[in-house]
Length: 291
Image (cartoon, rainbow, N blue to C red):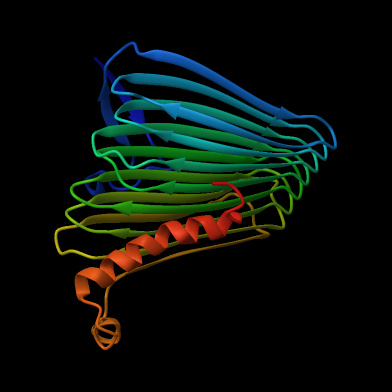
């Protein structure tokens, strides 16, 4: 049995909040898998990667790369009962694009631990679209380094939590180049004693003048016994930058419930409709061109 320290934030806050990171126990061993996807200069390419635990443990290493002016789109699906541990690295070349569509399937007895690292060169763009439907435990860290001038990150995360599900998410955008941009958004709905932690950090390093970053989260609470934690952070070593963050957290208002009731929809059915809409929003975010 090994202990993993994961989802650590770059600048720790008060320890009593329990949001500086997470610790999990994992069994050693398991099945090792490796995947690689790349596109050459001026090439456009689409790849599919599927990972299934099938009741055991899977350790997956994934390498993505896009050369200058290339565009790589990868659809990554992870699911099945058991534990999945993913380490993914993405190298985005100059004027290149990597689009990662990361979808987890619902399995109550499964655990997902994913580390997603991306490095983006000048005028490159990394796009990350994720859907986490809620499982026994889901831990995800996305760490994007905007190394080159005018590089960009677009991150859209959608999640659901129900029946004691645990979600622990940590998104970091490190601005190194000049005139870089990061746009991190998370949206989800929580029900049935779910526990969720979301950390979003925009880190403006020295030399990142002219850069912009925004991080927002929208959370819909559908039960009274939910544990919801949100930690937006902006770190700054540079003067000429613009950063913003915020969160909207709330439950169904009386006006909303009345609207549904006037159309013959119960509160329970209304909650189900809203939860189903989260997945529809995920598909719309990346264009839904792949099923």
